[in-house]
Length: 122
Image 1: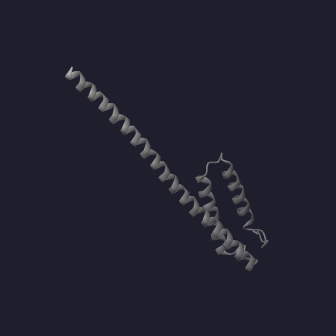
Image 2: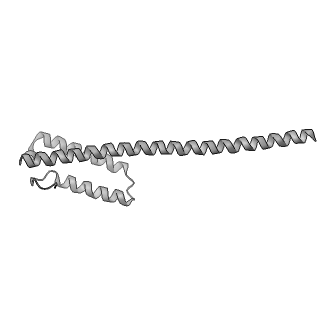
Image 3: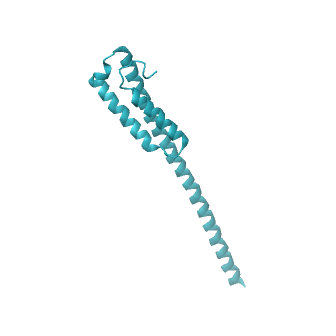
C-alpha cells in the first residue's frame, strides 16, 4: 500500500512537472515571437523613414534645381530610394491589403521621383 502511494505520488509529480514545463515553454515561445515582431517593426520603421527622407530630399532638390535629376547626387539618391523600396517590399506579406497599398504608394513615389516636373512629388 505504501509502495503504491509512493508510485502514484511519483506519477502525479511527473505529470505536474511536464505540465508546468510545457506551459513555461509556450510562454517563452510567445515572448520570443513578440521580441522578433518588435525587432521587425523597428527595422521596417527605420527603412520607411529612410525611404521617405530620401524621397523628400529629391523632391526639395528638384524644386530648387530644375536639372537636379541629371546630377550625380540625384542618381545616388535614386539608387538609395530603390534600395529601401526593395528592402521594404521584402519585409512585407504580399497577400495583406496594407502591403498592396504600401507597394502602390512606393511605386508612385519611385515613378515620379526622376521626372523633370518639379511638382511630381507633391
